[in-house]
Image 1: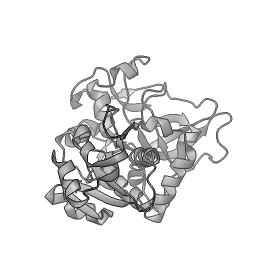
Image 2 (image 1 turned 180 degrees about the vertical axis):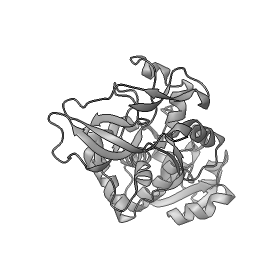
Image 3 (image 1 turned 90 degrees about the vertical axis):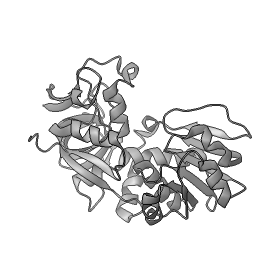
Amino acid sequence: MKAIGVMKFGEPDVLEVVELPEPHPGPGDVRIRVHAATVNPTDLLLRSGFMAAMLAQQQPPYVPGMDAAGVIDELGPGADGRLKVGDKVVAIVLPMAPHKGAYAEQIVVPAASVVPMPAGADFAAASTLLMNALTVRLALDALALRPGQTLALTGAAGCVGGYAIQLGKGDGLRIIADAAKADRELARALGADIVVDRGDNIAKNILAVLPEGVGGVIDAAMLHELVVPAIADGGGLATVRGWKEAVPRGIVVHPVFVSAGATDTAKLDRLRRQAEEGVLSLRVAKVFPASKAADAHRLLEAGGVRGRLVLDFTTFAN
């Protein structure tokens, strides 16, 4: 089968079409014929070599991709009775696992990491759901704010930030979001109650509208210590790249790793239902043929993408 792989780490041009043996599911696994895979910032880290230590047990080609949508075409022994061949599904994929990442015509994943596609969504839109939404769900669960409390978030215009607004509102929270001038209307449309200027003065900007500070922050923009002063005593900070430093005033830092929830089927299915109900918006910025993965990586690295970039694996047309 064909996949998009990396023989050596580097710039986007190292991504290439590679041939891999056809995979087959083991006990508890399913195989999915991939129609679409989302391009996430984590994929850029894998391609560039940032995650090399995590891939030490694999041989190249390394295959990026953590989000996929497609059709189940084979079930392993003892696979989840929820699923059957022919089901349209979405899955969380862990590129560090033996079967590698989602940038492939066929992937093998634990059945527990697979849920039905949201009704009414096409494959491209459906592929954008799970990784970012699960990241936010894990962050909200770690912060454990009560309905009526205030959540602040950074990076509101991005996909993690956008889902943080929407899932936070779904949890009954008041939302303060940061945004550049061009993205203010987007943040409001997603449901933010208050929008403040983004940047290094984020804590000052939040405290200007809420002097007592917020109960928690989801830091999708990785501002880290810069946002800590905006958090009330005893509050929480959820971070997305493993940042965990000592902070004052009883504030607890919660590094969030999506792998921790990759087989939490109940959480994944809840996110699927919330997409169906309109709580979550599936935002596709652009779809590329899979063979143009390098172009998608370059565009994401350039910044300013609103919504997700998606690779189409139904054809490897140039």
